[in-house]
Image 1 (cartoon, rainbow, N blue to C red):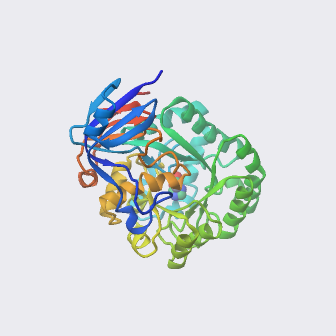
Image 2 (cartoon, helix red, strand yellow):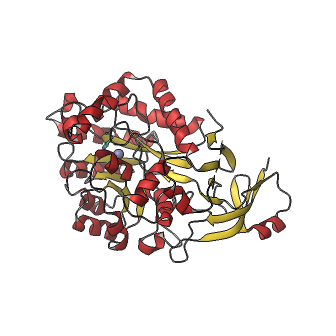
Image 3 (tube, rainbow, N blue to C red):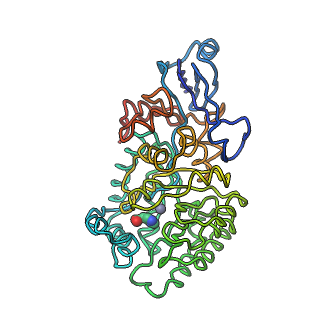
Length: 425
Ligand code: IZC
Ligand code: ZN
């Protein structure tokens, strides 16, 4: 049955459409200059956007609607997209906080068998059901904060059956719950005890399983933690080239701690995105811009690690890179699901303007996970994934930080969040 919804009196409607860039992600100044409609209206039928215009015009054209919502001058944006998370895992790592506060570096904690490897132990010990239960709690928090599409990586199994279990969990979550999920294989996340000193055979193992991964539809992307003491540029290249061959698209955890050349590798292989980039070189950033790689920056992580953040201002102003922002939600370097808090960090720590921040978590984030055709903008014919904010403008959301400013969220025109609370379990 056809269900219709009309939203009247939207004070600011951020469509994220751009006069100068009709398709693809937004670069440079275009991130700032997207369409904002005042006193706008929206009409939705059967989960799709049918009409965008002035409130008066939309009311006149669609006087009959099953449901009418009065936005009362508040803001409506596309549903937010979180393009980099480690959503599925077991346990937590607050036991490492004292070490961290005492100045022990993230990579040293990992090298001593903690960090990612401690989450690997917990995740291996958990059943598929337990993983799904923990992830659902996180997914609800994400959705309540305005997120409608989430990328989720594996990488805490580190054996073929255990990686599979994590990816199955993503599939179960996608089937049972309204939030849209995109899954990424990150088997090359850390080197487990049994492969220590023998990292190349771990890469061989992943390469041998890539085809099955793709045909089983378990992952769309392949990612690698290209980092000092984890996976070298050569190992990353070998895995990613095989992944591309197997039909997966590429992502890289690049230059998070050391300037290893992850950004350059992302450009060479034409990865869809390079993520982190705290230590990325000028050459790497400029190669990324030439190759059309999206820069995914993770300011919650740099803040939590006490590290100098990615040079997002230079990425936009000097390199004209399309920049996206993500939570990097994970139990170690960024234990928060709250994308709105990370948006505030993007503004205050990376010096992005409020409009750039919204572009980075909608249109550019959608392109960073291959969803640019269906998510991240409001356009006639697209699925109605939207947020009605308890705010009249984008600046308010990043200025009044640390609390949830979402009133309602619709996914496919269905109400998923009301009064900042999810309506599903
Ligand atoms: O669990 O620490 N950086 N991988 C690479 C992470 C952070 C996640 C973690
Ligand atoms: Zn990550």
